Image (cartoon, rainbow, N blue to C red):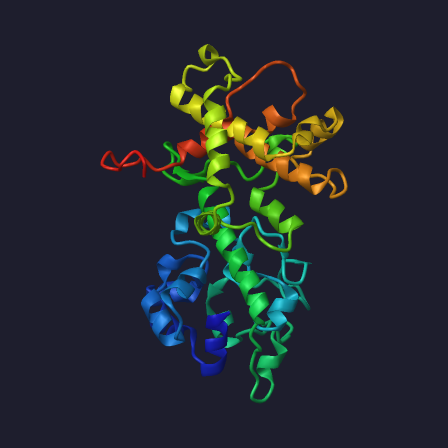
Length: 365
């Protein structure tokens, strides 16, 4: 969007735009330079000439390396019609896992919204010669920009903040999901997860489940808080009184372990101590009724990928269930009771991601 507006206002050729902003030679300019990946662009020049920060430049691209493009971002311009008509576009609309614009609750689309001709997401002749206008039907995509003394009204502060939070969330979720590796036979980059299952997926199967960010984008107007935001919030406020914390820690020492250590040799006594603490905190802090919801409701939650109508359970029960599921795993919390106890897999996953503490760090720190 920035390049299109710059091209529109300065009436520059594609070669001139490439000299200013790209790292490519003239031959590659003729076929179009991919706008999804940052590696092809002179980011310092972009920041200087468009008078934006380096962080804004990075946020304007879908990724930093080209080998993740085919699995992550759409090669056609993907947009919200109302955002485009107002002169706004964001790089995370290009991501395959995004389905709708959270600002207008509208599905994203590709192609000209009048004639449906494809719009390639590249810096090429189409963008330079006819910026923000369809080359087939000559429809102006941003009407306010082509009027005499035309300009685009920026998003309101609330709208801009919402889009910024979705951008941070998309970056967090997509960067940690779907690791990329090389095929040992061909040397090509491949995704660890296939994008389309080889066999038809049945409802409730792992292959039928959409990306976790897609679910957030479908269901919620606001993105979930990032780990950075939650960590900052935890440092600002202490929700548990010191005396109550001492009671929980004391009770955890005497609590019986709920899984057989002999059956799970990789979970040592250090892990057992943390699990006792988590289970004790649950019994002290959260409503016990979350454990006693009817078995049918628990089973449906498990089968439906933890998605339920808002009137299925009350908010306190949902909060208690969410807390338990994140620490113990859905299978342990929601599966029918069978007398088979497992370690708290959510706790194990959380502990596995803690960076190792330097030996020089004091134990009480």
